[in-house]
Length: 313
Image (cartoon, rainbow, N blue to C red; front, side, top):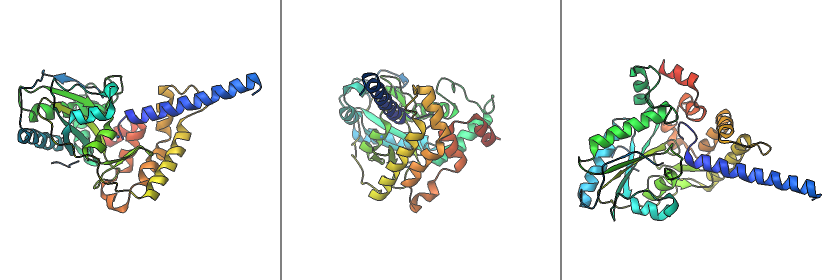
Protein backbone atom coordinates (compact mmCIF):
# COMPACT_ATOMS: atom_id res chain seq x y z
CA UNK A 1 0.00 0.00 0.00
CA UNK A 2 1.18 3.51 -0.72
CA UNK A 3 0.22 6.95 0.40
CA UNK A 4 -2.01 7.47 -2.59
CA UNK A 5 -3.50 4.70 -4.70
CA UNK A 6 -0.63 2.71 -6.15
CA UNK A 7 -0.05 2.61 -9.89
CA UNK A 8 -1.21 -1.02 -10.17
CA UNK A 9 -4.40 -0.27 -8.25
CA UNK A 10 -5.12 2.83 -10.34
CA UNK A 11 -4.84 0.74 -13.50
CA UNK A 12 -7.11 -1.92 -11.99
CA UNK A 13 -9.72 0.65 -10.96
CA UNK A 14 -9.50 2.35 -14.34
CA UNK A 15 -9.95 -0.94 -16.20
CA UNK A 16 -12.93 -1.94 -14.08
CA UNK A 17 -14.43 1.53 -14.44
CA UNK A 18 -14.05 1.41 -18.22
CA UNK A 19 -15.66 -2.02 -18.28
CA UNK A 20 -18.53 -0.70 -16.17
CA UNK A 21 -18.86 2.29 -18.47
CA UNK A 22 -18.82 0.06 -21.54
CA UNK A 23 -21.51 -2.16 -20.07
CA UNK A 24 -23.57 0.93 -19.25
CA UNK A 25 -23.18 2.20 -22.82
CA UNK A 26 -24.19 -1.19 -24.21
CA UNK A 27 -27.30 -1.20 -22.02
CA UNK A 28 -28.15 2.31 -23.18
CA UNK A 29 -27.74 1.25 -26.82
CA UNK A 30 -29.98 -1.75 -26.27
CA UNK A 31 -32.62 0.50 -24.72
CA UNK A 32 -32.43 2.95 -27.63
CA UNK A 33 -32.56 0.13 -30.19
CA UNK A 34 -35.04 -1.97 -28.27
CA UNK A 35 -32.40 -4.46 -27.47
CA UNK A 36 3.53 -6.49 -8.59
CA UNK A 37 13.77 -9.55 -0.73
CA UNK A 38 16.03 -9.07 1.72
CA UNK A 39 15.48 -7.14 4.92
CA UNK A 40 18.31 -4.79 5.80
CA UNK A 41 20.75 -6.93 3.83
CA UNK A 42 7.46 5.07 -11.74
CA UNK A 43 9.59 7.16 -13.80
CA UNK A 44 12.21 8.86 -11.72
CA UNK A 45 14.77 11.54 -11.32
CA UNK A 46 18.25 10.81 -12.56
CA UNK A 47 21.78 12.00 -12.25
CA UNK A 48 24.95 11.14 -14.09
CA UNK A 49 25.30 9.54 -17.44
CA UNK A 50 26.38 5.95 -17.01
CA UNK A 51 28.04 3.81 -19.63
CA UNK A 52 29.93 0.60 -19.94
CA UNK A 53 32.68 2.08 -17.78
CA UNK A 54 31.93 2.28 -14.05
CA UNK A 55 31.74 -0.74 -11.79
CA UNK A 56 32.36 -3.98 -13.58
CA UNK A 57 32.46 -7.19 -11.57
CA UNK A 58 29.60 -8.89 -9.81
CA UNK A 59 31.34 -8.63 -6.45
CA UNK A 60 31.50 -4.84 -6.77
CA UNK A 61 27.82 -4.73 -7.66
CA UNK A 62 26.92 -6.92 -4.71
CA UNK A 63 28.79 -4.50 -2.49
CA UNK A 64 26.70 -1.65 -3.91
CA UNK A 65 23.50 -3.60 -3.17
CA UNK A 66 24.65 -4.17 0.41
CA UNK A 67 25.54 -0.50 0.85
CA UNK A 68 22.15 0.60 -0.53
CA UNK A 69 20.35 -1.87 1.77
CA UNK A 70 22.21 -0.58 4.83
CA UNK A 71 21.59 3.08 3.95
CA UNK A 72 17.93 2.35 3.23
CA UNK A 73 17.49 0.49 6.52
CA UNK A 74 18.73 3.52 8.46
CA UNK A 75 15.88 5.49 6.91
CA UNK A 76 13.15 2.97 7.66
CA UNK A 77 13.24 1.39 4.20
CA UNK A 78 14.07 -2.06 5.42
CA UNK A 79 13.70 -4.17 2.30
CA UNK A 80 16.24 -4.15 -0.52
CA UNK A 81 16.93 -6.70 -3.23
CA UNK A 82 19.19 -6.46 -6.26
CA UNK A 83 18.58 -7.72 -9.79
CA UNK A 84 19.48 -7.08 -13.42
CA UNK A 85 17.32 -4.38 -14.98
CA UNK A 86 17.29 -6.05 -18.38
CA UNK A 87 15.37 -8.99 -16.87
CA UNK A 88 12.61 -6.61 -15.75
CA UNK A 89 12.54 -4.91 -19.16
CA UNK A 90 12.18 -8.28 -20.87
CA UNK A 91 9.24 -9.05 -18.57
CA UNK A 92 7.28 -5.83 -19.16
CA UNK A 93 8.18 -5.21 -22.80
CA UNK A 94 9.19 -2.05 -24.68
CA UNK A 95 6.19 0.05 -23.61
CA UNK A 96 7.21 -0.06 -19.93
CA UNK A 97 10.95 -0.69 -20.24
CA UNK A 98 13.20 1.55 -18.14
CA UNK A 99 16.40 3.23 -19.39
CA UNK A 100 19.37 0.90 -19.07
CA UNK A 101 22.00 3.66 -18.75
CA UNK A 102 23.69 2.61 -22.00
CA UNK A 103 24.68 -0.79 -20.61
CA UNK A 104 24.10 -4.39 -21.65
CA UNK A 105 23.78 -5.36 -17.96
CA UNK A 106 22.47 -2.80 -15.47
CA UNK A 107 22.14 -3.01 -11.71
CA UNK A 108 18.75 -2.31 -10.13
CA UNK A 109 17.86 -2.37 -6.43
CA UNK A 110 14.23 -2.59 -5.38
CA UNK A 111 13.60 -0.77 -2.10
CA UNK A 112 10.60 -1.28 0.17
CA UNK A 113 9.30 -0.80 3.69
CA UNK A 114 7.44 -2.47 6.53
CA UNK A 115 5.73 -0.81 9.48
CA UNK A 116 9.20 0.33 10.55
CA UNK A 117 9.07 3.26 8.13
CA UNK A 118 6.72 5.12 10.47
CA UNK A 119 9.28 5.92 13.16
CA UNK A 120 11.67 7.90 10.90
CA UNK A 121 8.76 9.28 8.86
CA UNK A 122 7.02 10.77 11.90
CA UNK A 123 10.36 11.99 13.24
CA UNK A 124 10.98 13.82 9.96
CA UNK A 125 7.54 15.44 10.17
CA UNK A 126 8.13 16.54 13.77
CA UNK A 127 11.56 17.97 12.98
CA UNK A 128 10.47 19.74 9.81
CA UNK A 129 10.51 23.59 9.88
CA UNK A 130 6.89 23.32 8.77
CA UNK A 131 5.90 20.77 11.40
CA UNK A 132 3.72 18.03 9.97
CA UNK A 133 4.73 18.80 6.39
CA UNK A 134 7.75 18.06 4.19
CA UNK A 135 9.23 19.85 1.23
CA UNK A 136 7.85 18.79 -2.17
CA UNK A 137 4.90 16.90 -0.70
CA UNK A 138 2.48 18.54 -3.14
CA UNK A 139 4.74 17.54 -6.03
CA UNK A 140 4.82 13.92 -4.89
CA UNK A 141 1.24 13.46 -3.71
CA UNK A 142 1.68 13.76 0.04
CA UNK A 143 4.22 13.73 2.87
CA UNK A 144 4.87 9.97 2.93
CA UNK A 145 5.77 9.92 -0.74
CA UNK A 146 7.90 13.04 -0.22
CA UNK A 147 9.72 11.27 2.61
CA UNK A 148 10.41 8.25 0.41
CA UNK A 149 11.80 10.47 -2.36
CA UNK A 150 14.06 12.31 0.07
CA UNK A 151 15.25 9.10 1.73
CA UNK A 152 15.95 7.41 -1.61
CA UNK A 153 17.90 10.41 -2.88
CA UNK A 154 19.94 10.42 0.32
CA UNK A 155 20.66 6.70 0.34
CA UNK A 156 21.71 6.73 -3.31
CA UNK A 157 24.08 9.64 -2.69
CA UNK A 158 25.50 7.81 0.34
CA UNK A 159 25.77 4.28 -1.03
CA UNK A 160 26.51 4.53 -4.76
CA UNK A 161 30.19 5.14 -5.60
CA UNK A 162 30.86 8.61 -6.91
CA UNK A 163 30.96 8.85 -10.68
CA UNK A 164 28.43 6.11 -11.42
CA UNK A 165 25.23 7.07 -13.19
CA UNK A 166 22.08 6.69 -11.12
CA UNK A 167 18.38 6.80 -11.97
CA UNK A 168 15.70 6.83 -9.28
CA UNK A 169 12.15 5.60 -9.79
CA UNK A 170 9.19 5.82 -7.41
CA UNK A 171 6.10 3.69 -6.92
CA UNK A 172 3.73 6.65 -6.67
CA UNK A 173 4.52 7.92 -10.17
CA UNK A 174 2.02 6.85 -12.81
CA UNK A 175 2.68 9.04 -15.85
CA UNK A 176 3.47 7.30 -19.15
CA UNK A 177 7.16 6.55 -19.36
CA UNK A 178 7.50 6.96 -15.59
CA UNK A 179 5.58 3.91 -14.44
CA UNK A 180 7.23 0.90 -12.78
CA UNK A 181 5.34 -2.36 -12.26
CA UNK A 182 6.62 -2.63 -8.69
CA UNK A 183 4.60 -5.71 -7.73
CA UNK A 184 5.67 -7.69 -10.79
CA UNK A 185 9.23 -6.51 -10.19
CA UNK A 186 9.09 -7.74 -6.59
CA UNK A 187 7.88 -11.13 -7.85
CA UNK A 188 10.60 -11.34 -10.51
CA UNK A 189 13.33 -10.37 -8.05
CA UNK A 190 12.33 -13.09 -5.57
CA UNK A 191 11.35 -10.54 -2.93
CA UNK A 192 7.70 -11.54 -2.54
CA UNK A 193 5.18 -13.69 -4.37
CA UNK A 194 2.64 -11.69 -6.41
CA UNK A 195 -0.97 -12.83 -6.46
CA UNK A 196 -2.33 -11.02 -9.50
CA UNK A 197 -5.91 -12.05 -8.75
CA UNK A 198 -6.04 -10.06 -5.52
CA UNK A 199 -3.28 -7.55 -6.31
CA UNK A 200 -1.03 -8.41 -3.35
CA UNK A 201 2.57 -9.43 -2.82
CA UNK A 202 3.08 -11.81 0.10
CA UNK A 203 6.56 -11.83 1.65
CA UNK A 204 7.81 -14.96 3.44
CA UNK A 205 8.50 -12.97 6.64
CA UNK A 206 6.24 -9.92 6.48
CA UNK A 207 3.30 -11.42 4.64
CA UNK A 208 1.22 -8.69 2.97
CA UNK A 209 2.38 -6.05 5.48
CA UNK A 210 4.96 -4.29 3.36
CA UNK A 211 5.16 -1.97 0.36
CA UNK A 212 7.59 -1.34 -2.49
CA UNK A 213 8.61 2.30 -2.61
CA UNK A 214 11.43 2.95 -5.04
CA UNK A 215 13.90 1.50 -7.50
CA UNK A 216 17.54 2.55 -7.65
CA UNK A 217 19.17 1.92 -11.05
CA UNK A 218 22.97 2.12 -11.15
CA UNK A 219 25.42 2.12 -14.06
CA UNK A 220 27.08 -1.07 -12.84
CA UNK A 221 26.76 -4.73 -13.77
CA UNK A 222 23.50 -6.32 -12.72
CA UNK A 223 23.41 -9.04 -10.09
CA UNK A 224 21.59 -12.31 -10.57
CA UNK A 225 17.82 -11.95 -10.72
CA UNK A 226 16.49 -14.58 -8.32
CA UNK A 227 13.22 -15.26 -10.12
CA UNK A 228 9.78 -15.84 -8.59
CA UNK A 229 9.78 -17.12 -5.00
CA UNK A 230 7.62 -19.94 -3.62
CA UNK A 231 3.97 -19.16 -2.99
CA UNK A 232 3.51 -18.84 0.80
CA UNK A 233 -0.31 -18.54 0.71
CA UNK A 234 -3.00 -21.20 0.72
CA UNK A 235 -5.45 -21.39 -2.15
CA UNK A 236 -8.27 -20.77 0.35
CA UNK A 237 -6.66 -17.54 1.59
CA UNK A 238 -6.10 -16.28 -1.94
CA UNK A 239 -9.70 -17.10 -2.92
CA UNK A 240 -10.95 -15.17 0.12
CA UNK A 241 -8.76 -12.20 -0.82
CA UNK A 242 -10.04 -12.26 -4.40
CA UNK A 243 -13.63 -12.24 -3.13
CA UNK A 244 -12.83 -9.38 -0.74
CA UNK A 245 -11.29 -7.48 -3.64
CA UNK A 246 -14.52 -7.76 -5.63
CA UNK A 247 -16.43 -6.36 -2.64
CA UNK A 248 -13.98 -3.46 -2.36
CA UNK A 249 -14.16 -2.76 -6.09
CA UNK A 250 -17.96 -2.75 -5.97
CA UNK A 251 -17.83 -0.07 -3.25
CA UNK A 252 -15.33 2.00 -5.24
CA UNK A 253 -16.56 1.76 -8.82
CA UNK A 254 -19.91 3.38 -9.60
CA UNK A 255 -21.21 1.86 -12.86
CA UNK A 256 -23.54 4.85 -13.34
CA UNK A 257 -20.82 7.53 -12.91
CA UNK A 258 -17.97 8.85 -15.01
CA UNK A 259 -15.42 7.43 -12.54
CA UNK A 260 -12.78 10.09 -12.96
CA UNK A 261 -9.46 9.61 -11.20
CA UNK A 262 -10.58 12.03 -8.47
CA UNK A 263 -13.86 10.16 -7.98
CA UNK A 264 -12.09 6.81 -7.80
CA UNK A 265 -9.53 8.05 -5.30
CA UNK A 266 -12.26 9.57 -3.13
CA UNK A 267 -14.37 6.41 -3.00
CA UNK A 268 -11.27 4.25 -2.51
CA UNK A 269 -10.36 6.26 0.58
CA UNK A 270 -13.91 6.11 1.93
CA UNK A 271 -13.95 2.32 1.53
CA UNK A 272 -10.54 1.80 3.13
CA UNK A 273 -11.79 -0.84 5.57
CA UNK A 274 -12.90 -3.00 2.65
CA UNK A 275 -9.51 -2.63 0.99
CA UNK A 276 -7.81 -3.45 4.28
CA UNK A 277 -9.84 -6.65 4.40
CA UNK A 278 -8.25 -7.86 1.14
CA UNK A 279 -4.84 -7.84 2.80
CA UNK A 280 -6.11 -9.38 6.01
CA UNK A 281 -7.35 -12.41 4.07
CA UNK A 282 -3.81 -13.51 3.23
CA UNK A 283 -2.36 -12.57 6.62
CA UNK A 284 -1.74 -15.59 8.84
CA UNK A 285 -0.67 -15.56 12.53
CA UNK A 286 3.00 -15.86 11.57
CA UNK A 287 2.79 -12.32 10.12
CA UNK A 288 1.05 -10.75 13.12
CA UNK A 289 4.20 -9.04 14.40
CA UNK A 290 4.39 -7.07 11.13
CA UNK A 291 0.77 -5.97 10.85
CA UNK A 292 0.34 -2.25 10.42
CA UNK A 293 -1.21 -0.54 13.45
CA UNK A 294 -4.75 0.40 12.54
CA UNK A 295 -4.04 4.13 12.44
CA UNK A 296 -1.12 3.62 10.07
CA UNK A 297 -3.20 1.39 7.82
CA UNK A 298 -6.04 3.91 7.77
CA UNK A 299 -3.63 6.65 6.71
CA UNK A 300 -2.18 4.51 3.92
CA UNK A 301 -5.64 4.16 2.44
CA UNK A 302 -7.46 7.36 3.47
CA UNK A 303 -4.58 9.86 3.23
CA UNK A 304 -6.34 11.83 5.97
CA UNK A 305 -4.50 15.04 6.98
CA UNK A 306 -6.39 15.10 10.29
CA UNK A 307 -5.25 11.58 11.13
CA UNK A 308 -1.64 12.34 10.25
CA UNK A 309 -1.77 15.48 12.39
CA UNK A 310 -2.85 13.37 15.37
CA UNK A 311 -0.03 10.90 14.75
CA UNK A 312 2.56 13.67 14.54
CA UNK A 313 1.22 15.14 17.79
